[in-house]
Image: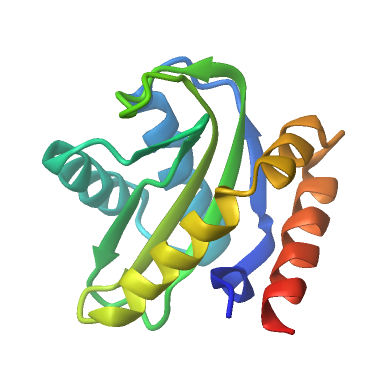
Length: 153
């Protein structure tokens, strides 16, 4: 089962962020707009998690994530970055795609399973290349939905 069953088409976007903090701000704003969440609270939770260690997954991908009080279910956003951004990833590569995940504060294993599903999906080099080359946000959503459907089968 893929975590992308949680993804709303409006949650896919592009950002001109030039730093890690700007990427987190862009994700928080997208979460707020799409899921009616409080952007400052989301940003604070993601920054707090980031202080524990970089969520730079490697291979040009970051997976900023946090647990949020009052959230009923996990939600995701995806941001392609117009300029690669340093994210302190273990492999040292800058990030081109940020995949945000928020889960309820008491989600336990659900949050970990969603993170694992996202990381498995983003290990696929061909999919990462297709996401980077997609002409627009709608094409990114279609690629992610197609991948999600393949996981469900």
